[in-house]
Length: 496
Image (cartoon, rainbow, N blue to C red; front, side, top):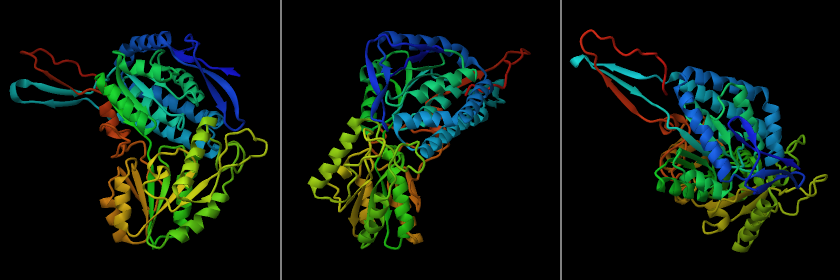
């Protein structure tokens, strides 16, 4: 069994707390690693290292910071196969999806580089009294990042790349379920030239994270994870006067109209519902069948769900990998039992699956429910597993009302061939992202996204321009020089 360490001040730091978490190989169903959980000594060490690194890193010209991140981007590209395999082994998603995640992480770093290059100090010269006015965006200090197991590379990159580009230093607390990608990136950042202490990795449970959130040296907290925890983090951070962006997961809807291309809609639902073992925050878990289309949609979905190739994420042809832990699999199975007991029609049952050669793995096949009602837990709550629900409604207005009433519908799509229907859906649906004839209308790295529902406590969104404002302060400078005294030297550097 592999023993992991924290990463503090450019070095591996063995856990001293005496507390550890088990890390699984989900395809084999075995404990593969021991992950240390941070105690006071590790927390103090990471905060001290970050605090010492901040003055020099924040004073580094922004173009040089961008060069460091560009070097890191290149290293991610060089090591993308290695990183993807780490993700598969620890999370369970199939290799193609892990490679996609690495590509999106690279895109997030590239966006941070480009953003910091484009930001300039704004200067407005005033003819009145010879006063010059300056505007700058200095960094905050130490930013704490809390990321989920579902996106072990992309979620951290989306947080720390722009934070570092803006001159902040960073403490990352990734999920102990999928720790290795974060540790590998820490070494690649150092190889790219990031100073020691500017990026640290601590593995922690709720006790450690609560301590970090409350600590006076933490200037801001960036969270990605489940909605209940996002709400708790936001409440706790604001109670301590911290700047916080907390992005919860969500339960997205695809509305299928009677005039839709059903094969295209069914394929989109499969891609949106069963990718990454249905553990992404941007998963379509609900199909809303409008009018009399329900039976035909179910007839197209059921054979597709049954035909999903379940297996080790590194196996050629695998479409759906295992869940990360046995506890996670059991929780999803309980939802399936609850759906049956609540009266939903179970069209495809993914339980009882055994993968040859991986009989102990945490596998669960695709599951499809029909005639789901809004009152049911399988509709109201986030399942985080390969379960797709079909709800039936009489018309578009009812479908839109259903989406708008759900507390976790951050995004929604509509499949239709009618332009008026598409226009009405786009205007009336109350979600941060709306799509027409696309499975998951996910934002790109340059677009702000955080949803409009309970999955976004507060109003700080990520990424995009909102993220730049989140990671910096707004500073105004006025100057006037008497007589013939020269003005202050303008270096032209961007303080972000």
